[in-house]
Image (cartoon, rainbow, N blue to C red; front, side, top):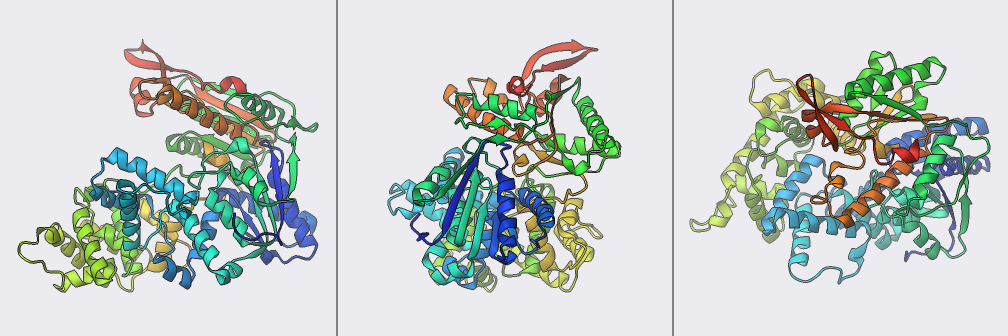
Length: 633
């Protein structure tokens, strides 16, 4: 870290899962407020949007006990902080980008545009991962970080495509924000907070860690656990940052928490997992007041039986006096989440599920198979006719190569004329981009792109002034070409709100719900993917679908698909994932599994099959418990 932090008091808090690191941060915030610090001067950074919700609820409860007002404390993610920094007018001018991250369906268009470099798709994806990781680790600060030739050329193309659409890839956000603040002292003071606290430091990227350092002006406190380094929201979490933090801040206070406040079963499971050679050992012991008891094991025959068993267990716990909000169910995938929520609701227990991935997807090459994405893109255009990324997508839907060749030609034209994508499209529509008869490169796909652009302009005009459902239905009608068409349910769910359903508000709302998913589960059971337990503190945690195939994945058991060295890395990653869950429950840890399913279901769900037997004329598979069951049992 090159910035001057000599005037900032820094503290590192480390400890195993369940040792109270988050609670320590909350108590420090309350102490600051009790000593007269303004709530607006405090920033708390959490690893995920859902962890922010949990932190805010816990802080509110603690502030009430301490008789202080914490309403003005900013609780957010490093990603949101980076986008706020990049939303400055000067930052937009400096970067040439809008503070807008790519959604999953927009990333598909970027990938198609990158394929014009000529690399094989697998090689290209691996190279993109290298670039993305390097961005998060600020490796591009070294002018010689890329090899001359292919590597440098592909990276230049990636940056050119992002600049052409004025958009930002998620791994790039923190990198841009850090570099902007480092080069603009005024911006750094504008975005500074007197007191910055960071939870789950090992789960955020190095760029996010440096960003936290840059915005702290008086105190900086981080909390983390090396063994719990799991990717939950930021790409490429950086566990080494915990040690680099101490190296960069001479004289920093170092606090190690060793008393695990999880239930005895969870603490014991976490301790067993730490004994795994793949884990970095952290010394901790179970607190004396930890609730005694063993892990509750739920075993069902079929998956649908497991859903019911989990619902009955939770219903009994709620009937026994536990609040639904004190129960979290961790699931291996969206199928398990949806079915468990359905079973809980049938048992009269309120429940909400956090999505395991962005719900808007489909084949962008087939207009019939990506209607929700097309409707959202059209809404983006209505909200902002100068949205370059929306025009890129709109002009690419329905083509096998997403009209990537035409876009490459437009990008070259834009560079020659010092224009952006929108200006280039406008020139093309006005005939300024007409090619000579022999200039084949400039006319590949131009007719399709031109027609799409004209259709987009007509849509924008026809939807002008409309809001809410009327606007969404009008857009859906234009997209599908069907008179009286209505917007897909997923689009309405993402866009509509209780207030302000203008085009701009709905466009901002759907993007937030896609890119920063979280739910208000203050009075409901929270059903989340395994890794999203990070930052949560339930009294009872149910780990569902705990079988081989889900964790570890099916490929782990096939040496032909996953060589030994990759198996070792996969085992270490899964051990960290299970460890991160094990010590979360303060009162009760429950592990749930099923033992049998049909061969068809096992194939679709990518389960590891123990053996196959014929049952009532149907081929059924025996599904083994997860390799990590013994540690938790």
